[in-house]
Image 1 (cartoon, helix red, strand yellow):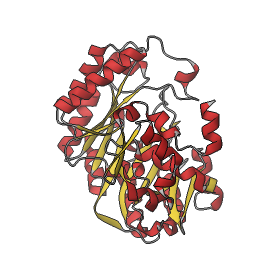
Image 2 (tube, helix red, strand yellow; image 1 turned 60 degrees about the vertical axis):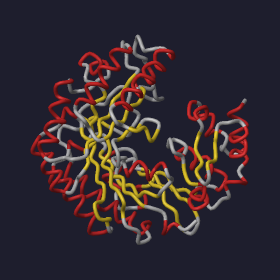
Image 3 (spheres, one colour; image 1 turned 90 degrees about the vertical axis):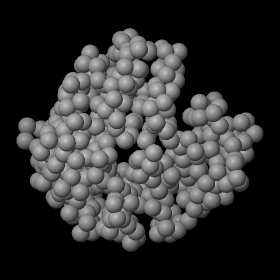
Image 4 (cartoon, one colour; image 1 turned 30 degrees about the horizontal axis):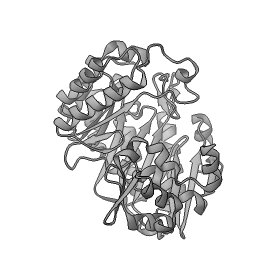
Amino acid sequence: MNGSLIPLSLYIHVPWCVRKCPYCDFNSHQRPASLPEAAYVDALLADLLMEVPLALGRPVQSIFFGGGTPSLFSGAAIARILDGVRAQLTLVENCEITLETNPGTAEFDRFEAYLVAGVNRISLGVQSFDDDKLRRLGRIHGGAQARTAYQMARAAGVANINLDLMFGLPNQSLQDAIADLQAALELAPEHVSHYQLTLEPQTAFARTPPANLPDEDALVDMLDACQALLSTAGYTQYEVSAYAQPAMRSRHNLNYWLYGDYLAIGAGAHNKCTADGRVRRRVRQRNPSGFLKLAGSPNVLSEDRQIESAELPFEFMLNALRLREGFAAPLFGERTGLALDQQPGFQQGLRRGLLVAQGEQIRATELGYRFLNDTVALFLPQGLANAASN
């Protein structure tokens, strides 16, 4: 396992939103009256200096601005960040640079400025085109605003757009879910992230679940109908919730799913880097004010640990088996330093029909993909696996 050969990405976290959505479990906080944009950019660039040695001279394959709502920041701020990144790291030619955008904060001039700064992919958090569903989700935009934001991005020259869309929403029928997806497909985005609303722990929805959520049978019907619609429209499912037109898969997310390395800067950001045959994870302070005070100092880290060898098979499979096509068998050894054929979970998965080996390609079967949590759990460290089965 040679860290210098593992592909490298960069994640940049902007922790503020106009308002916290009740389903969101990301590290996001309601923006203060005065957004500390310049101070936060300074902190990000100081934080970056701590990450540069972990690059081991590797070029950055992709950059992702996530949040929170990165589109709260001006084009000038995004340009300062990317200029700072280029000064410290090498980017591959045509590096994929994605910026998450909330339709409620979209402006034509900002899209133009983001493109000038180097952003070449926009991920638009639509979630639904139905105003009633958006209100129930606590979103700050309406369906018309979502369409307008998309059209502004196109008019500004953005050639690669992802739309985030949810299903399984309160009061949503099968017909509603299909209509939502049809509205998205009429815009012809290059990529669609289509995922089920889940009640994540520590969220407002987990504490007070919304009324009239679809039952399991209805959810299965929605997923089946929407997957068929996406396929008919020319979108290939390449990951659990990701669908793309030909050659338009998210390079950044693919690096996560293939257990690549990634630097990470910003409040609450998580990195994963490999060096000297060891996988290491570091986590930043979650609170924006704490991050602003400590950026550039080792004290900004709330966690810094080496992943034990026993944990690596589960970590790898948790990501790689999300891919429809799975992974090439040698990749497991390259990313973990372990032998795949010596993993009890791998042998069990083959015997139980949850995994299949086709030449060097390993993937979940249809059964294994349907029960993906159970398939991945085969690779838990022994003690955790025993606890999970009890």
